[in-house]
Amino acid sequence: MRAAVTTKPGVLEVASVDAPAGPGPNEVLLRPELVGVCGSDLHLFHGHLPVTPRRGDSLYPVIQGHEVCAVVEELGSGTASSGLAVGDRVAVWPLSSCGACYPCGVGRGSVCDAFELIGVHTNGGLAEQLVVAADHVFGIGDLAATLGAFVEPMAVAVHAIQRGRVEAGEPVVVLGGGPIGQASLLAAKAKGARVCLSEPVAARRERALALGADEVADPADGDLLDRARTFGGRGVAVVVDTTGAPAGLRSAIEMVASAGRVVVVGISGDEASIPLGPFTDKEFDVLGSSCHDRRDVEAAIEVVRAAGAVLEAQLGPEYPLDRAADAFELAGAHPESAMKVFVRVTG
Ligand SMILES: [Zn+2]
Ligand SMILES: [Zn+2]
Image 1 (tube, protein in one colour):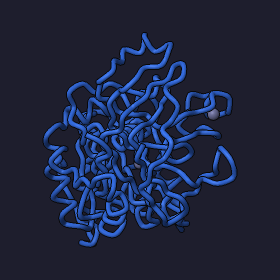
Image 2: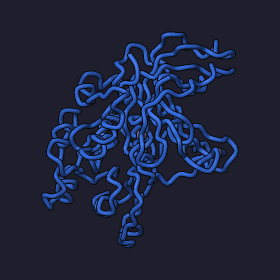
Image 3: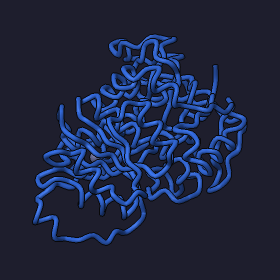
Image 4: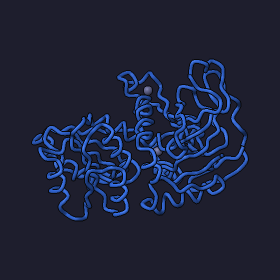
């Protein structure tokens, strides 16, 4: 089968590789159609992803791609009760957890000590065939492939909004208008929240308005704190920081209401210097958020479905598998130009 293989950091080769053995018990064989390129893909591609290999002593070579929309090609034994049928279009939940560690024991498998991601620890969707556990595959009916491939990033946002315990009517400020920021906006709106999105790039503020933001703000204006407080009314209940930048966390702590919640979902290797006074003055919660669990994926499918054509209009462009390297290049060099770049693997 054809696949885009990251052979070592910085090198992506489209080549013929051995197809996976057919589906084993409780597995399904998928034909990936469309795969989204994620910021974490670029980190892995460049050798900067802070994860340890689970199999062998290197993450490479690996077939990347964890934002996968696919079609079911073959069902393994024991999958009759999965509700899946050959030909179904599906989204893939790429995370597996061990079930034995402390976070797994308290129902928080998204931060399992031994978690594995398809497309990071094991081969992913940038290939004509992919075998996945049947319970990690979710039928999406007639949803467009672009929307199907956006289920995984939407699940990241749904998880962040769930971590923040966002409720209907609450004012939420989202910092950052990249894909997870825009997805967080949609996930918070789906909960009935009011949302203001802060983002320095004008095109991304326009995108947020198109996706239903109640307000947008430019943090470069200098009055972001005033804007957020005015938007918040009695107080900004929740701030979702998707920036991964120390300045983002600092303004989140500044603008959040006393007794509010700050959710940190931007992946970052930076260190932040922040004032400690507000922690006791304001008694807010700071909540980290990582990946997603099964319920987040189920909820994300509904958020994506409800957003429908409005979201679809913001997604793309697509590159064929042969040009996967160009897709990575565009996503890395001009992240503001496209909310989500896809690789069209088949179909
Ligand atoms: Zn991702
Ligand atoms: Zn675990």
